[in-house]
Image (cartoon, rainbow, N blue to C red; front, side, top):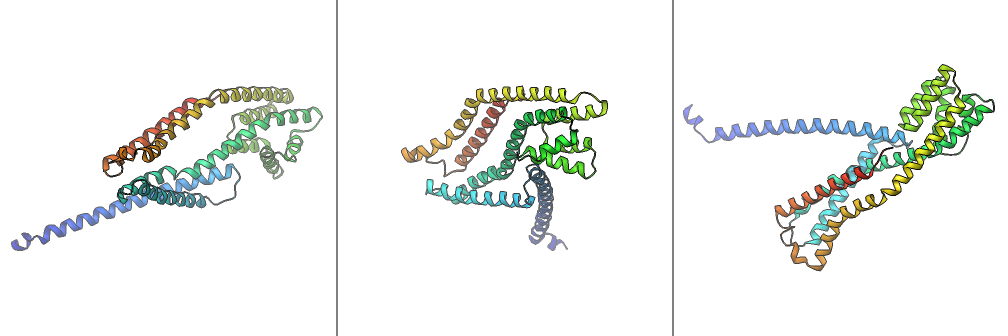
Length: 297
């Protein structure tokens, strides 16, 4: 037994078993984390698609993110090798992976942009709709009839949302519950005030027409202040883009004007680490400037 224990085969076998078990645990953890992330990603993407009324499976968004990341990875590797022919492919792959990770959430960001643009247009149309509902109530219409009048108009997105509200009411859903559903679906602070005013007036029997007119004036003033702040902070938003793009534009310019200054940047681990740090700092700076120039009313 002793010669067998002293044989170099035993440590090698134990090392093989240890590495195999560690690899199995690592693969299992990665699989668990990736599955959880995929489920959460699909759930959030499905919610964002429903918010902007796009009939598309949430899995398509994930496929688009993966395809876009793969394309950016390939283009970044080819561009890095073309920019510095003497650089190694491993460095290009490292930069490509970083670029792919940065563009992976791009489809989700597009969905969020479309949702914000749709919500902004809804809020802009809400003022005229409140005045129209108030006029209908003064003319003797009920609140349900006034909602039907708005739903019959061709003014998306607000007519689409009021059409869904009217359909829920026709299916037997109480108006208060339908308003709560619409408020949860939109996530608009302005419409939350409107929904609260209508529900309160129905429960207490208050004067709804004057309340809607005051809300229309409040929304009009908020839109005016928001537009003024948007114009004031326009320069700051432009500076955020210019400051973020400047390092990369300088890198391309130096490559054509004085390529000798870039020696060692694409040929060593330190150079790639410097590029990763620059990308990280530029991203943080961009987000900080955007946070400063974004003022909530």
